[in-house]
Length: 192
Image 1: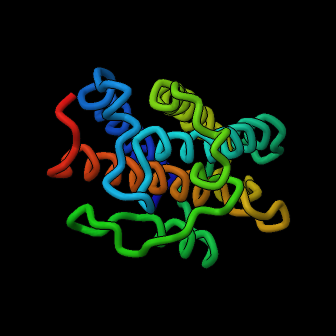
Image 2: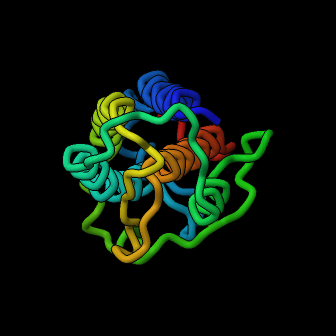
């Protein structure tokens, strides 16, 4: 794929996420955002607390690497590394918006374990983080997204190409937006 195609895709998915939140989640009650169908599931606030913690890490990493890189000349073609492709493909939804593979969240990013991640303003904060991500995607257009490398959240030693990391983060967001959609569509989801 080309770098422009990649950046257009991550921009488009991010805008859809913002739209979903504005249309479906901004007027929910506290009861609704804290509801979960069972004890092993996450509520809406837990889903977004999880995403916000990832955003805190990745957005800072993206901003820093874009700012300091010496690879200022964008390259038209983007080729994923094998590790990068494996990472983002594992997050990508299936053709029917189904979650193909389930993962256990890393302890540091799991609001069931780290309950202090949940602030009560998690949906609002995520919406703000999505706007911040759009700005970072715009800035990424001015660098070589294949040569800029970003550490991953669970190991500073492993680094992904910026293009792969953007796909990973955006597909991860999209995956959890689908989880939120499934939650509000649940037959037992509270009416108010």
